[in-house]
Image (cartoon, rainbow, N blue to C red; front, side, top):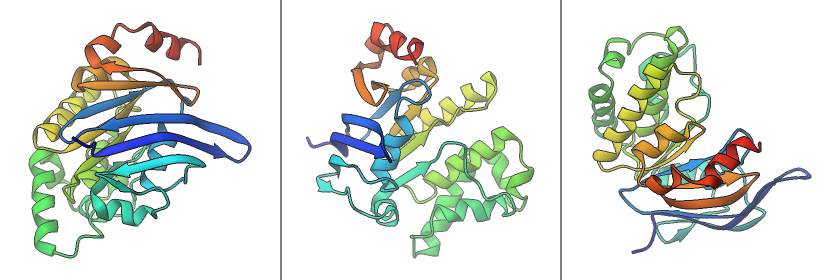
Length: 237
Protein backbone atom coordinates (compact mmCIF):
# COMPACT_ATOMS: atom_id res chain seq x y z
CA UNK A 1 0.00 0.00 0.00
CA UNK A 2 1.47 3.35 -1.03
CA UNK A 3 1.83 6.06 1.63
CA UNK A 4 -0.49 9.05 1.78
CA UNK A 5 2.57 11.22 2.43
CA UNK A 6 6.14 10.36 1.52
CA UNK A 7 9.36 12.37 1.65
CA UNK A 8 12.27 10.90 -0.28
CA UNK A 9 15.74 12.16 0.62
CA UNK A 10 14.57 15.76 1.04
CA UNK A 11 17.22 18.43 1.58
CA UNK A 12 16.57 22.13 2.12
CA UNK A 13 18.58 25.30 2.65
CA UNK A 14 17.97 28.74 4.13
CA UNK A 15 20.50 30.78 2.23
CA UNK A 16 23.91 29.32 3.04
CA UNK A 17 22.55 27.22 5.92
CA UNK A 18 21.50 23.64 5.24
CA UNK A 19 18.40 22.83 7.29
CA UNK A 20 17.55 19.31 6.09
CA UNK A 21 19.95 16.53 5.11
CA UNK A 22 18.20 13.84 3.05
CA UNK A 23 15.08 13.43 5.20
CA UNK A 24 12.91 10.42 4.32
CA UNK A 25 9.64 9.54 6.03
CA UNK A 26 6.22 8.19 5.19
CA UNK A 27 2.71 8.30 6.62
CA UNK A 28 -0.01 5.85 5.63
CA UNK A 29 -3.69 6.72 5.52
CA UNK A 30 -5.31 6.54 8.95
CA UNK A 31 -2.04 6.78 10.87
CA UNK A 32 -0.92 9.28 13.48
CA UNK A 33 2.83 9.68 13.04
CA UNK A 34 4.94 12.03 15.14
CA UNK A 35 8.04 13.94 14.12
CA UNK A 36 10.14 14.69 17.17
CA UNK A 37 13.20 16.76 17.92
CA UNK A 38 14.49 19.69 19.88
CA UNK A 39 14.11 23.30 18.80
CA UNK A 40 16.06 23.85 15.58
CA UNK A 41 16.11 20.18 14.58
CA UNK A 42 14.32 20.84 11.28
CA UNK A 43 10.75 19.89 12.12
CA UNK A 44 9.07 23.07 10.89
CA UNK A 45 11.29 23.12 7.81
CA UNK A 46 9.98 19.65 6.98
CA UNK A 47 6.40 20.93 7.19
CA UNK A 48 7.26 23.88 4.95
CA UNK A 49 8.65 21.52 2.33
CA UNK A 50 5.48 19.42 2.41
CA UNK A 51 3.12 22.36 1.93
CA UNK A 52 5.29 24.13 -0.66
CA UNK A 53 6.25 27.18 1.38
CA UNK A 54 9.86 26.08 0.99
CA UNK A 55 11.03 24.21 -2.09
CA UNK A 56 13.46 21.35 -1.42
CA UNK A 57 16.89 21.75 -2.93
CA UNK A 58 16.96 17.99 -3.49
CA UNK A 59 14.64 15.03 -2.99
CA UNK A 60 10.94 14.52 -3.60
CA UNK A 61 7.62 15.02 -1.79
CA UNK A 62 4.72 12.72 -2.71
CA UNK A 63 1.04 12.83 -1.76
CA UNK A 64 -0.92 9.66 -2.49
CA UNK A 65 1.26 8.74 -5.45
CA UNK A 66 1.46 12.28 -6.85
CA UNK A 67 4.76 14.15 -6.77
CA UNK A 68 4.02 17.62 -5.35
CA UNK A 69 7.35 19.32 -4.66
CA UNK A 70 7.20 22.42 -6.81
CA UNK A 71 3.46 22.88 -6.26
CA UNK A 72 2.37 26.23 -4.77
CA UNK A 73 0.91 26.03 -1.24
CA UNK A 74 -2.65 26.75 -2.40
CA UNK A 75 -2.58 23.71 -4.67
CA UNK A 76 -1.25 21.48 -1.89
CA UNK A 77 -4.00 22.66 0.46
CA UNK A 78 -6.70 22.16 -2.17
CA UNK A 79 -5.46 18.59 -2.65
CA UNK A 80 -6.51 17.90 0.94
CA UNK A 81 -3.76 19.00 3.31
CA UNK A 82 -4.72 20.91 6.46
CA UNK A 83 -2.06 22.84 8.34
CA UNK A 84 -1.94 24.06 11.92
CA UNK A 85 1.19 26.25 11.89
CA UNK A 86 3.56 26.78 14.77
CA UNK A 87 2.44 29.74 16.87
CA UNK A 88 -1.23 29.46 15.72
CA UNK A 89 -0.98 32.43 13.27
CA UNK A 90 -4.55 33.62 13.80
CA UNK A 91 -6.00 36.89 12.54
CA UNK A 92 -6.59 38.67 15.88
CA UNK A 93 -9.00 41.32 14.56
CA UNK A 94 -11.21 38.78 12.84
CA UNK A 95 -13.87 36.75 14.62
CA UNK A 96 -13.53 33.10 15.54
CA UNK A 97 -15.79 32.03 12.67
CA UNK A 98 -14.01 34.27 10.18
CA UNK A 99 -10.71 32.67 11.19
CA UNK A 100 -12.21 29.21 10.81
CA UNK A 101 -13.50 30.07 7.34
CA UNK A 102 -9.98 31.01 6.28
CA UNK A 103 -9.21 27.29 6.35
CA UNK A 104 -11.89 26.65 3.73
CA UNK A 105 -11.21 29.40 1.19
CA UNK A 106 -10.64 26.79 -1.51
CA UNK A 107 -14.00 25.11 -0.82
CA UNK A 108 -16.66 26.37 -3.23
CA UNK A 109 -19.65 24.70 -1.60
CA UNK A 110 -21.12 26.75 1.26
CA UNK A 111 -22.97 23.62 2.37
CA UNK A 112 -19.66 21.81 2.78
CA UNK A 113 -18.20 24.77 4.68
CA UNK A 114 -21.19 24.77 7.04
CA UNK A 115 -20.77 21.05 7.58
CA UNK A 116 -17.10 21.62 8.42
CA UNK A 117 -17.96 24.40 10.85
CA UNK A 118 -20.46 22.15 12.61
CA UNK A 119 -17.79 19.46 12.96
CA UNK A 120 -15.40 22.01 14.50
CA UNK A 121 -18.08 23.26 16.90
CA UNK A 122 -18.89 19.67 17.83
CA UNK A 123 -15.23 19.11 18.65
CA UNK A 124 -14.85 22.47 20.45
CA UNK A 125 -18.25 23.52 21.87
CA UNK A 126 -16.77 26.67 23.43
CA UNK A 127 -15.98 27.99 19.94
CA UNK A 128 -19.66 27.93 19.04
CA UNK A 129 -20.25 30.27 21.99
CA UNK A 130 -17.31 32.45 20.92
CA UNK A 131 -17.91 32.40 17.18
CA UNK A 132 -18.56 36.18 16.95
CA UNK A 133 -15.75 37.09 19.37
CA UNK A 134 -12.47 38.54 18.05
CA UNK A 135 -9.79 35.85 18.01
CA UNK A 136 -7.26 38.18 19.63
CA UNK A 137 -9.37 38.37 22.79
CA UNK A 138 -9.39 34.60 23.38
CA UNK A 139 -7.27 32.73 25.90
CA UNK A 140 -4.23 30.82 24.66
CA UNK A 141 -6.06 27.52 24.90
CA UNK A 142 -9.04 28.84 22.96
CA UNK A 143 -6.75 30.25 20.28
CA UNK A 144 -5.20 26.80 19.91
CA UNK A 145 -8.70 25.40 19.39
CA UNK A 146 -9.34 27.95 16.63
CA UNK A 147 -6.03 27.11 14.95
CA UNK A 148 -6.83 23.40 14.95
CA UNK A 149 -10.40 24.07 13.86
CA UNK A 150 -9.15 26.14 10.93
CA UNK A 151 -6.90 23.23 9.97
CA UNK A 152 -9.73 20.68 9.91
CA UNK A 153 -12.73 22.75 8.76
CA UNK A 154 -12.24 21.65 5.14
CA UNK A 155 -12.08 17.96 6.18
CA UNK A 156 -8.49 17.38 5.02
CA UNK A 157 -7.13 13.96 4.16
CA UNK A 158 -3.88 14.84 5.90
CA UNK A 159 -3.46 17.18 8.88
CA UNK A 160 -0.05 18.67 9.70
CA UNK A 161 0.11 19.82 13.32
CA UNK A 162 3.21 21.92 14.00
CA UNK A 163 3.98 22.27 17.72
CA UNK A 164 0.31 22.50 18.80
CA UNK A 165 1.10 22.33 22.53
CA UNK A 166 3.61 25.20 22.43
CA UNK A 167 2.90 27.68 25.22
CA UNK A 168 0.07 25.71 26.78
CA UNK A 169 -0.18 24.64 30.40
CA UNK A 170 0.17 20.91 31.10
CA UNK A 171 -3.59 20.63 31.63
CA UNK A 172 -4.44 22.31 28.34
CA UNK A 173 -1.75 20.34 26.53
CA UNK A 174 -3.31 17.10 27.79
CA UNK A 175 -6.70 18.24 26.48
CA UNK A 176 -5.18 19.14 23.12
CA UNK A 177 -3.59 15.73 22.65
CA UNK A 178 -6.90 14.10 23.46
CA UNK A 179 -8.40 16.20 20.65
CA UNK A 180 -5.68 14.92 18.32
CA UNK A 181 -6.72 11.39 19.23
CA UNK A 182 -10.36 12.20 18.47
CA UNK A 183 -9.48 13.77 15.12
CA UNK A 184 -7.61 10.62 14.16
CA UNK A 185 -10.52 8.44 15.25
CA UNK A 186 -12.71 10.40 12.82
CA UNK A 187 -10.49 9.22 9.98
CA UNK A 188 -8.03 12.07 9.44
CA UNK A 189 -4.40 11.10 8.88
CA UNK A 190 -2.10 13.15 11.13
CA UNK A 191 1.56 14.11 11.07
CA UNK A 192 2.22 15.55 14.52
CA UNK A 193 5.33 17.72 14.90
CA UNK A 194 6.24 18.15 18.55
CA UNK A 195 8.96 18.93 21.07
CA UNK A 196 6.87 17.25 23.76
CA UNK A 197 8.00 13.72 22.98
CA UNK A 198 6.17 11.86 25.74
CA UNK A 199 2.72 13.19 24.88
CA UNK A 200 3.27 12.91 21.12
CA UNK A 201 4.36 9.29 21.39
CA UNK A 202 1.33 8.51 23.54
CA UNK A 203 -1.11 9.45 20.75
CA UNK A 204 0.88 8.18 17.74
CA UNK A 205 1.58 4.74 16.35
CA UNK A 206 5.00 5.51 14.85
CA UNK A 207 7.54 8.28 14.96
CA UNK A 208 10.69 9.82 13.57
CA UNK A 209 13.40 11.70 15.47
CA UNK A 210 15.18 14.61 13.83
CA UNK A 211 18.53 15.93 14.96
CA UNK A 212 20.21 18.80 13.14
CA UNK A 213 18.19 18.15 10.01
CA UNK A 214 18.73 14.40 9.88
CA UNK A 215 16.49 11.46 10.79
CA UNK A 216 18.43 9.70 13.54
CA UNK A 217 15.76 7.22 14.67
CA UNK A 218 12.40 5.87 13.58
CA UNK A 219 10.04 3.12 14.62
CA UNK A 220 6.98 2.26 16.69
CA UNK A 221 6.17 4.84 19.34
CA UNK A 222 6.51 2.26 22.11
CA UNK A 223 10.11 1.64 21.08
CA UNK A 224 11.05 5.27 20.46
CA UNK A 225 9.87 6.18 23.96
CA UNK A 226 12.87 4.28 25.33
CA UNK A 227 15.28 5.17 22.54
CA UNK A 228 18.76 6.42 23.35
CA UNK A 229 18.69 8.34 20.06
CA UNK A 230 15.62 10.26 21.23
CA UNK A 231 17.29 11.27 24.48
CA UNK A 232 20.48 12.26 22.65
CA UNK A 233 18.59 14.37 20.12
CA UNK A 234 17.16 16.50 22.91
CA UNK A 235 20.29 16.69 25.03
CA UNK A 236 22.73 17.60 22.26
CA UNK A 237 20.88 20.57 20.79
